[in-house]
Image (cartoon, rainbow, N blue to C red; front, side, top):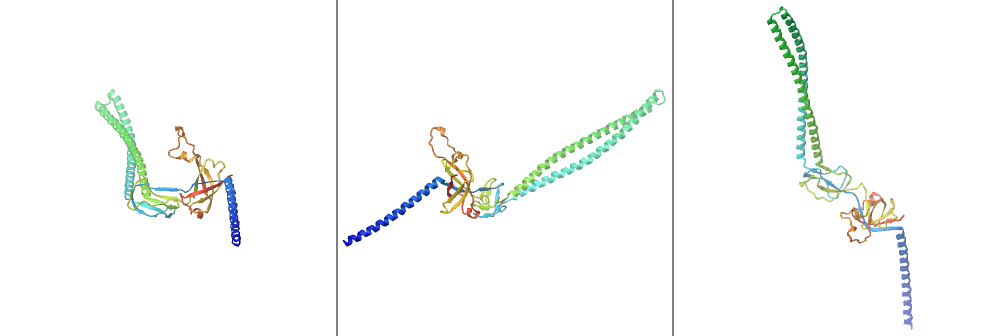
Length: 352
């Protein structure tokens, strides 16, 4: 009987402990259920989210051989830092050739300007000769008219009349020659000015070529477009690259980071711009990052895919669509810098 009572007391103790544990578990489950219901009522959440930031390619605007690389993988860089240098020998030669061609065209312009000045002076001299020849012609015409009258009244000999006529013909010829010389000099001036216009256009073209040559030389030095961190390095010194080739990737650290959360279409009805959001990253379990809604996509993610769905083919299967929601991280930069683009995240947004 004594042993039986001992077993009975032990069983009672175990029963009480079990009851207490069961009660605690029940209370815990009840609290968890209430909290879950409250959160379900007050929040929308999704685990279909990733950290994003601007990752831009560094491309070359000229081709050539890489002479020097001045960055390493995952290195922090400042705006304007030299990332790599391309051999510029050929571009320097092209620039020097353009400079020589421009100098030659400018020299031709100087020669033409000198010719215009000289020809203009010749034209002025020809104009003076016209005046002199005209005065001589008028005098010879008067002499001829006078000898003609005298010859009619037999006061002058035929020889005198013929001499006067010959002098008149010479004066007429000289006058016409002076006019022709003047017109020729004017025409030459106009021709030179036309040539000058051609060379002026050539100078503009040569200046443009020289500017392009200087640009090409400057393009052989590739600099960081902004403050950031370099990505993976896939190029080597001595490697030949092409115009437009992607050489590296840089992460813009000044533009901040954000989260793209893909919520179900049934979850976005009460979401508003500037709504508060809580983000947890798989890389930092238990740590909550604050954010706010910046924008909601104007269409579902599927509509922006390369092959958007076509439900008119008769193979329609209704699937709940996802709406991308952009959430800006509002924590300090030191906190946000812990996150990396591409990290998976869980997002919880308070319903308004």
